[in-house]
Amino acid sequence: MFDLSRVENSLGVSFADKTLLQRALTHRSYLNENPDVPWEDNERLEFLGDAILDFVIGEYLYHRFPEMREGGLTSLRAALVRTETLASFAKRLGLGRHILMGRGEADSGGRERPAILCAAFEAVVGALYLDQGLAAVQEFVQRLTEPELNRILEEKLVKDAKSQLQELSQGRLRLTPVYRTVAERGPDHAKEFTVEVLIGDEVYGRGVGRSKHAAEEEAAKEALARLRRWGAAEAGGKLPGPIWRALLTLMDALRGLRWVLAGSVASALNGLPVEPRDIDILTDEAGARRIADALADFAVEPLAWRETPQYASYLGRFRVEGVEVEVIGDLIIKGRGCTLTPALYARPRRVAVADESLLIVPLEAQLIANFFIEGKEERVRQIAAHLKAHGYDKALLRQLLAEQELPESIVEEIWGLLADG
Image 1 (tube, rainbow, N blue to C red):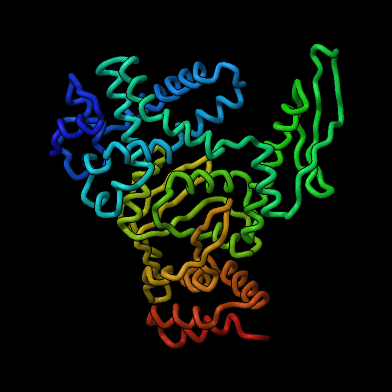
Image 2: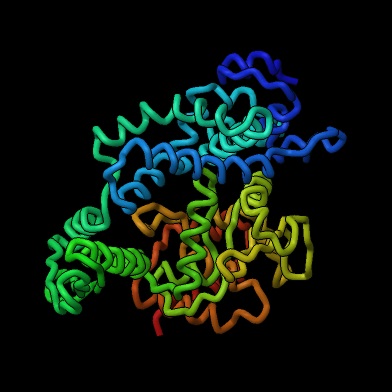
């Protein structure tokens, strides 16, 4: 158990109800390993603190910048309450070393993970509000946000949609966006403008506003959304809208955790013409437990060891943005009298998705895995045809087959799928 007085010294705040502070620094994983602990984790306090921070920082900015428009205030508040900023506050206060968390979470770097640090900071804010009220929170938060706000303003870290679009368009397409006004409506005192933004000769966005600048901002936002959706195609395969949105949510929620995309999404990102309907995430047992914790709010079936005639694994099911997500830990595939071990997925490849890097199972590994799963014959033929047409990594395939110690007859059959003729 940590010394609460040391925590209070770090915060510069003394709590009347010490149990509030204790709860604010209790991660869910600690209660998983210590089920007899008589207090709850920090998630409810995190929820409260999140709402209070939005209000306190919003009010602070409102008075700090009396002439700033709503859009600018919103951008500044977003910069101050984003995960990375709040995690930096937590680091500055030394919260990481005081958080009560499970041994596995701590060993995997949990005390440095931005999402955990951010949650702890929000929970401390919630606890301080319950203990001493809004004025104490305002004083505590302002002490941290003032220098950070100055840094954001000095380094121009808050960018409007037009600036973001210009950077993305020039970096990705080597083209500068051009805005044109296509309509003006209404009397002079209440005029409404319609603006289109072109990249090259193509219209990427359209916006309507009470001024040309406001309309240009709306057009830029629409163009940004389109360019970011286009990132999926750039990654090597087109993903349906729901899958794309769910993948973006997962990338944000699981930042800092190691996981590999498998199944139809990996096939699509490898260039295979498939229509993904769900998302499969592969990892090991420890990774699966950490991912399940991170996705707890999306859980449909809890993570548990499951065995069927075709596979054995730690399996949890989640629904993210309406899309089914399976988290699979230590997968073992059974079929044709053989057992395939997790080494099959030990050599993922990287693809760029939404300006980030994702690990995906290569088609060579998917060919082997699907070969052993009953009912996947058509998928096996599809993968083999794609590899034959576009080329494949023979050395990787040879290594993956050797690691599985398969009967020679099956190895020859798999190589035969890729033979000419």
